[in-house]
Image 1 (tube, rainbow, N blue to C red):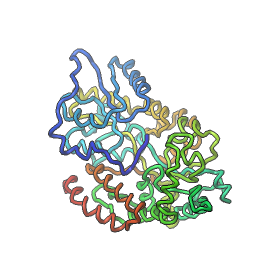
Image 2: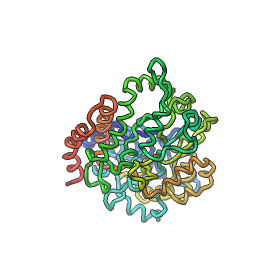
Image 3: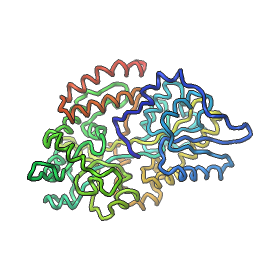
Image 4: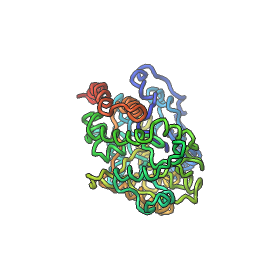
Amino acid sequence: MNKRIFSVLSLVLVASMLLTACSGGAAEQPAEQKVLRVWIQWGDNPQQIQTLFDKYTAETGIKVEVTAPLEDDKILPALTGSNPPDVLVLNGGDLAKSFYKEGLVDELSSAIKAGNIDMADMYEAPLSQCKQGDKILCLPWGTDAYALFWNKDLFEAAGLDPEKPPSTMEELVEYAEKLTIIGADGTIEQIGFIPDHSWSHSDLYVRNFGGFWYSDDGSALTVNSQAMIDALTWQQQFYTKYGVENIQAFSSGFGEYGSPDAPFYAGKVAMMVEGEWQVGPNFIPALKPELNYGVAAFPPPADHPERAGTIVNQGTAVVIPSGAADKEASAKLLAWMMSPAIVAEEFCFNSNLPTSKKAAEDPCFKELGEKFRVFVALMESPNAYAVLTTPISFELNDALGSAEEAILYTGANPKETLDAVQAEFEPKFKEAMGQ
């Protein structure tokens, strides 16, 4: 599941304008035919997902029709129309909060109670993306997290201990310099670390600096906090040191993501931040089985060792549309989806992290290997977080993405750039939060 923190999704950017204009939906099922419809934003293997839900049909006699992957532009018209799906599976909690604000999805307390869903079995970090105060607007159905990958052979060639990744962010900078090779003509031949490879990881860095772009309780916008300034300044140094044009020229020769020629696989990038799926059967074991690498939690700043083990979860969020025809049936299907056995089956197949503690004990996750277990263990870390979301998340994320690019690629001043974003979005945030 490929995620970019500062993503641009036009669906939500125009959502508030379209809500009153969208209408209509698919033709209703005949009254005598009991069919539940599940729509899922992601899904590289739709048949596998349909086969999973066929088990619900076998258990209950109720047919389930799965649509996956779902085109983004179909979600809003369906939710505002007369025939929304019975269960909707989103890529993250951002949309859930936006849709709840507009009255398009339900708060789930009654469904959780009706389905006897064991909330204590869920890891707190991924669950927190679904909370808004004391309300639960979605449930996490699988999640992702990011950690540090390092190439042990390149470490050894650079005179570094291949079994010891950097223990602090400062040490990572030192290692990156030793692992960078500049050719006689001044071009980069190998680089130690690129902070936004393969996409932005500012959520992870700012957490290691002790903050986020929202306060922990979600009640304040903190785009220009010291933690945010420190996180962008820390990233900026890599581009300043080697030159934006030099790094971009070097990056232009990278192989495609998910190919045997991807830069980490090919030994062009010595350290990277990546997700748990990389150690699953569809990525490194299949594309570069001989790769000698390690995985560990991303290191904290030297003066804050208590932040060791910091991860940021982000992933699938399940909602019940407010217009669902049979809320009781939707709640029962949701409870089945959240059961440990189903969570284990679906997310072991995808090499993603389970959101259920009982599911994490399933032998299938152990079969994914010790490197995958690094990620599972980090789910229990006291420094495990989720990406905080609010009704303005997508619009704000777009602006933060532009700010990050300006800081990294044009040398813009981090504080001044973030101050401008804070000034623009604080009134919007307060309005959205009813402050």
